[in-house]
Length: 245
Image (cartoon, rainbow, N blue to C red; front, side):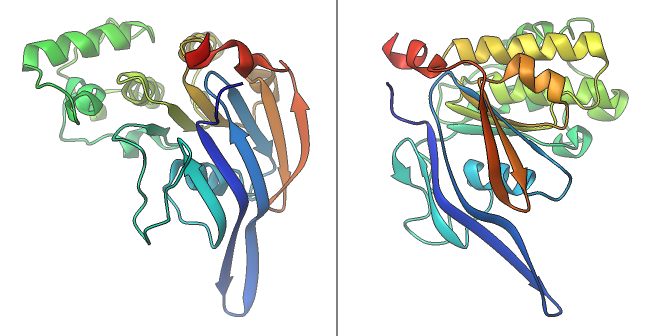
């Protein structure tokens, strides 16, 4: 079995306001391996999105450790240290806000390709954007258009293309199919599964139980900041995927 792409151990986050203490995440431990898709579900306010931010290194836990590629990303203080640029890519719940409204979508989609890689020309980046948008049934879009010219569902698929374009080790996605119709959501599910089959680990938050059952290898159910149940849908799937296939 391959080593985990991300591993959270004993993670806890507590918020306090006006004498009220809210335990957003309580003593959470989870590991996700290459090629594995882990779904996280539960009622609103149960800690799903906080869990996602912790595993992505977007929020520092008040207790516990987060390891990406085996390294404690918070070991050196308040600035996370991922193994490499682009190791983890997020897909946020608000796709419109996650895209720079001043940038044409080709620039947003291909921005991860500009970090720590050989320089690409504008034409090369536009071609790469078209290729990855086509996988998400957006080949009809002009890659020079702005996010404000797109629907919310189109922006969501642009954000997913951006997350996958550079082959990250880990993708964390908050409700990635929530703004999509059934047919489009099925297409996105296929693309996410293809990414996992190529070795990317995914952690996906969703209220859509049916969609998670189709997509995920494991589902974690949360309540009041804790994982209260774990459902294994495809046992040992990560042992068949990833770098050691």
